[in-house]
Length: 586
Image (cartoon, rainbow, N blue to C red; front, side, top):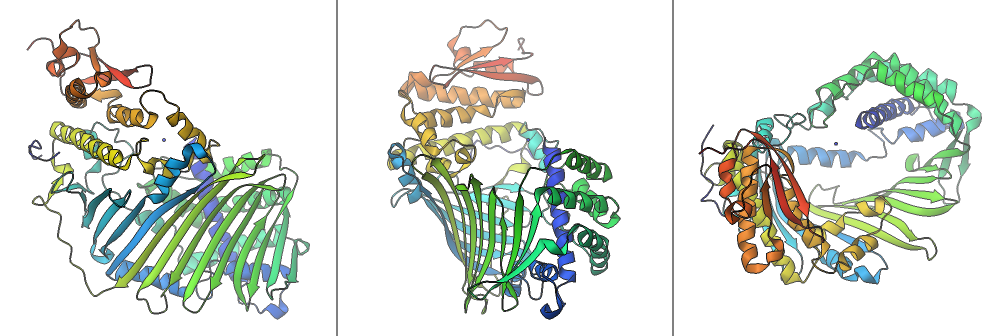
């Protein structure tokens, strides 16, 4: 292991959910293959049941499917051919709360611009990225990837790239004092997905296995067809909730005897490193899922699945029930293609929430100056009395130009700080200093922006809305804090919380140094932000031990210590309690 001096450098019930998700994915693949079996029959000789299956099959049909062939060609070309690009990302929040108007406006003014070049075939890329908080407050940085090295550089931190090598990641995590049990030595994103691919022979065998199940469970009277006023033809399957449960149980029972699919599931879950699964899927998992479904009682109600086509091409898939409406739609123009997915959650017939995703492509026919635009949005009813809603809309736009080749300078020791190369203590000291530098940069920029709530990017996430609490309540808590605002306290605390819990001595030493630096600053700026250090069981009132770094002499690098924090009345950390075996003889 190389020894380097960094002082000169500028300053987790998942198993059940996982099993259900993977089984459902496999069942979708199976059903798609069966639908495809009926695709080549002509419409003139088909029943409503067969017509439904034909057009539902186009969701995955390769030659004449819902996903156009030129889209697949475009994505494949991005994998194989170098390209240059430029684009932008931004979020838009909509809401009616006057208390959060400043926060919403600042979030809506924020954007990320990027431009660069990528060569996936040769494993290299570079992007110039700028965070725009306002016209006058920006943070530029460069992302670079060559081979197994991934780096970020910004002049505000260092002239060199802070780089991680995608090798020996478990060892790197251990040096940082992290639990490495679920961390692979190298992250691979494609190998696990390849295990789910079927050969043509396997696809034919699997298709035959499940065809009889569908023909047995689905009756002709459950299908209807109609011609709509807009010239489209609609084919609808209607299922009671109890019928749908019985269908899933029958398919799962067939899955128990499907060695091909079970083998792929087991291989996917056993060998997958990037998805962090712990146990492989096997027949016992399927049996447990079947048993759970058979014991459950289906609620009253029904839902419909409709396949809508025009000119023998699928345009829309709709799923409708008392609780959920789902639509998957495609629109084609001369040189553009739009895909739209929208889901609405209902209660007593009234929409409570809406989720949508759109993808637009133009320039696909020439494969040059291709504009790809993606939007994702979430809306939720925030006040049922006034029908007020809260919404989050995310926009990502990118223009792609394919080129013959690109040049990206390699990430090396000359231009990079490669974190994997350093031993634990200097690495942890550097990470601590880096984190503090990032906090300082953010504090300075937010002061320039006049934003008092940490960073607008925090409020871009819709998590509070998804759990039923709106951003209004989140922001009111911040605004109503009478002393130090909540987001500033959170930012302050987060810089120390990484050390909480069981830590090796090297991490504890880094904590003491960080507290010492914080206290030196606090003596000048604000005594309220001083942090006291208590070495449990040690009687020492010297300020250099209580507030400074003299306690470093107590800490042994390879020993394990417990770190806990106490907080003042405003919720800010004001004391660190360190317990363990201390070195008292020098």
